[in-house]
Image 1 (cartoon, rainbow, N blue to C red):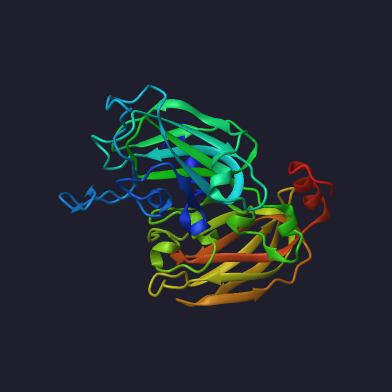
Image 2 (image 1 turned 90 degrees about the vertical axis):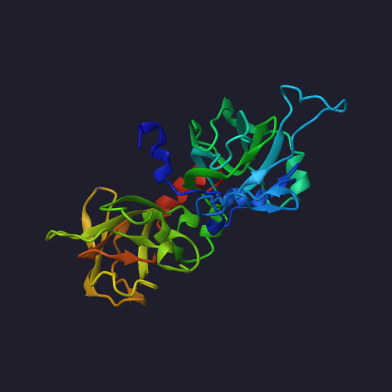
Length: 342
């Protein structure tokens, strides 16, 4: 992975499993717009024809023609709008044209907007004020096309445009969640959750699956919905380090090994990391069981900004939850970032 695509280590804010949805498209004649945000990679089975032609696992529009039946004008385009699963600061976009070889769009662009409340899809489609985050750019067929985004603004929706038409398999919108502070103020919450602004900062191993999975909402539906490491052949242990939504004091933790029957860790420990880099024990090394949701009270008043989970010696986890409250200084910082009055 090059520096230009390091952003793909950040969570996909548009993915369906985080609550993302394709709310509007001007056309989906050949393949449904909803496919754009499916979590799994696009698949293809040749010579699989339905009433509208070859079945594609992506979003595909008709071939454009003008009123005279001629080819489209240079600026003609098809458009889809995605509501992010949680608002956030976007670091990069991947326009994946997997399996679209003779029917991919030659060029694409991406715009974004921040919308309050829950307007109807048609209202959002008609809004002015969209910000271009990916200029009109050439893309290849049957390939992942990454674009770095240089913006610190918080967005709620993105708009993908294909020039002039064609098919895109998946749209990935990688970034850091920045939820509404009013939600976080409502009481104790999971400071590790992606939807609340938590983020996996680093991990020892990502051989089988992405570590960000452990912070997704809901329960994993299979072993593939969590984070699993390769088998260790040394005396060290695997670990994952989580950056919390903000500095906070934790009261409860949940370590979930659901679906990991013969490959869960034998034990786990939680270590808090303060803003100055010093460490504090939150949960000593504790035996954990396969296919089990473990809940532990945390008896510490230390304010921490990150938490490291050590898994002994290796294995898989379905979910990690870290419940608590923001400190006043963290709340004030988030309020300033969102332009609110602390």
